[in-house]
Each structure stands twice: as C-alpha cells, then as structure tokens.
Length: 503
Image (cartoon, rainbow, N blue to C red; front, top):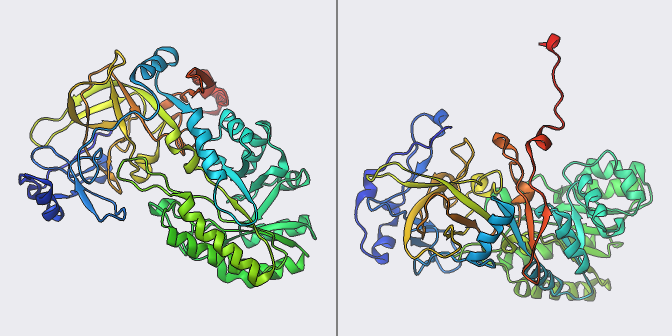
C-alpha cells in the first residue's frame, strides 16, 4: 500500500478560541502542504495543533464560512445522523447481507419521483430517469411504475432498460459513443439525440427523412466541480452552438426532421443559470420550426451534507414555464418539456452499511486516528474522484448510537492512498477529520448520500474486491435483496489462461 505522507505547516499551529477568530484567520489556518515525492502517493493536509480540521465551506448563498470539521454546518458542529435507517436496521443489514451493502429506500425513491413529475410546465412534461446514476433493474422498475421514461447514455443502457420493462419508444439516447448497432435500436422505436456533427451524419445516412433530436452545447455550464460541468467551451458534450449552420446543413442534406432540442449544462443549483440556459435553448428551437420538444437535461444538485444547497424544482421551474409560455406567444408553438434527473432522484435515497475493519494512529503531534472500512472507492468513488462529501454516521456493533464522539480520518480498504472517504473540500488530494460517534474495530459506519453515481460508478474489482450487494428497503420495512454479492469466480469468469508455450 502507498500510505499518505503529510507535513504540518507551522502557520497552522496557533490556537483558535471561537468561530469568529476562525473566520478572521481562515486564510492562514486553511493550509495545504504537498509532500515532496509525488510517487509516494503523498496527500495534503489541513490541520491545527488541536487536530481540528479547519476548512472553508463552498459558497452556498450565505457567504463563505469556516468550520472545524466536515460534519459541521456554518453555525455549529452537529454530528451527522442516519437518514432512513435506524441503528438497529443497520446492524440487521450487516447480519443478513454482510458488509459493505448498498441499501435503497423505496419511499424516498417514490417521493423524489413525485417531486420531479410536479416540475412546473406549460404544455406537458416528460421526466426521464438518467439511469447512469444507478441502473439496477429494481430501481428502473420503481421509476417505470411511477411513470418515468428513460435517458440512456449508451446503447447498452438502452438494452438494460428494455430488459427492465421499458418500451424502446420511451427511451431517449444521448451518448458520447454512438453505438455501432444504433440502427437496430432506432428501428425498434428508440429516440436519438445526435450529440455531434459526426453522429448526425451517421444517423442521416442510415435514416434519411426520419425524425431526430439535436443536443447542443449552449456555451454555458454549471456544476459543483469542473468534472460535473457538461456545458461551455471546456466540455465536449453536444454540438457547439456556433456550429448551428453546419448542423442545419446536415439536416437539409439528409432531409431530417428535427423534433427535439436537447441541452444539459451540469450539476448546478443556481436558478439564474437555469433560466438563462432555458432562454438560450429556446433560441435554438426557433432555428428549427419543426421542433416540438425541448429537453433541458438534469443536473439538479442535491445537498448531501447539511451545509450544501439543494435545487428546489419549483423555484427553478417557475421561470422556465414562463419562458415556454412566452415562446408560444412569439411562435405559436406549444413546446413539450423534458427533464432528465438522476442525482435528484437517487442521491439521498441510499446508504452504504460498512464495517470498521481496522483502526490505526499516526501519533498525537500532528497525527491522526484513521478508521479503515471494508468499503471504499470500490463502492463510492466520488470522494476520490472530485472530493465529494458524504455524511458518515457511526453505529455500534450492537446496533446503537455511540454516546461519545471522536475525530477520525476515514479511509477505504484499497491499497491506494487516494481511497479516502474524508477528503478536504474541493480537493481530493487533501485529508480532513470528521467528528462522529466513537468507533472501534467491528463497529458499523454508514455512508449516507450514496444513491447516485456510487454503485453505478464504482471502481469495482480493484484489488479484486467483489462487487457489493444491493438491497431495497420496502414500504413495510422489509429488506429485499436486489443484487447478490459477487464472488471471486464471477470476477475471473472472463479470463482465459495463457498457454505455457506462449510465455
């Protein structure tokens, strides 16, 4: 394993008496010091002598704040709480299914779906689940029964959705990699949004005179990090808006009937950005009089931590509805609205139940106490990938809440210094301590906010760890297994032995 190496900056050694002092000297206290040899997997660290992590909360509309640990809000140090499991239920999950295990909550999935279906609209709404967020067939079934359609990001996701019961005509494909078998999908009723000029040309050659959707990059993006921003000049998603003449020329060449315009700018929560993007998208619609549907994508941010903002669909949608009504006055066309939520539906609808399998310390002078889980980047990659923050909740091995608290750095089980569950804010290369219930080896730690882009975006099988099982908590509280734990034989089943005479 490549252990993290860090050095304490002397400037951070001053004592801090209260939050006001913290705000006043935040710049000198929030420090990041790189260790010399990059090959050692060195991490950066932000710390005070009292081993209290001091870090700035990302701007949330209330102004930047400084807090003593990742679990805190900007006004206190509240310990994170379980979202839908009880401590005893977390223990019961471990007893029945082992750890780590994903647990989804059916009630929350349905509640979020209902909120999405209530998105303000002027002339009709289709909600498409962005299934890349978590593609388990049970989740697809829940949303299908709620009346949602599907946004697929690959041809394989299309087949997966069909296998889960969706009709081809209720699936829309917007993809970075145009599948070689797209023609077979279209012939069965799949809707396609061309995301580049080359995709548009391929479609036109195969289906001249057919209906098509066009995904444009409107030149504006939004996202919690650069890795969740899919609009603007630094994003490859969609046809760049200045290439509109070329797109129109290809549509004329193949006599394509453009019936949908699609835009998606990323995972942001600013209503002003969404309103501006909607206006830009409607301008694109005017270039194609045959357009009947405008798809504004998804990316509705959900706050997992207490201090993070969430998108209010009613606030975001109200001005969009007004723009659609104005569009009808200007053009006489009643545009149908489509949205594609993923994170909004899933984020806080799943927890990962894990076990503390080791506990180590690196001393008292600038050191830390590390909790090592039997989960990590093999189950939730987001903290390692872009410093995403997840609530971490302590549960004793007996299924109760601890009565005392401690500060820990929480890491995963992979032989990788980047397998970190408590990165610093906006910096996947730094570590931060969390205050939580005191834990010992054998106790339980629940990772909250693990519904979207966790099971579906894990680095499974790294270090040959098997894929974790998934469980659905039903309305009656019963835990239903919806994916079995993988075994070693399944990991190896596609490997072919190299002949002795070949090496």
